[in-house]
Figure 1 (spheres, helix red, strand yellow):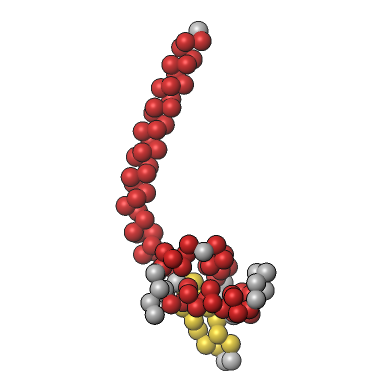
Figure 2: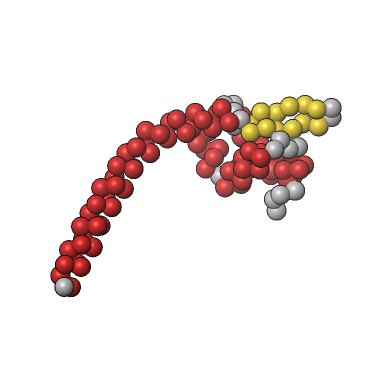
Length: 110
């Protein structure tokens, strides 16, 4: 089953796993050591991240190492870019309004 990447990153544990793997590739056991959850719970999170393409796995001997897939994260960033511009414009307008209010209050105090 192909998973939705946004559902995958909605979970704080999965975001924490991504943060760990952005630094270095790790085995499931090494990942699980960073959480107060069962190995099975962490494995489920890893599976969700792998199914949506955010993780790649690599077999090294008997161990499986999971790697962060920056290319997939770039797709998310590209999609969010359209909203980033809209919000930046709105925040800029809000800054102007707030500065005008502040200026008006300062003028009234004088």
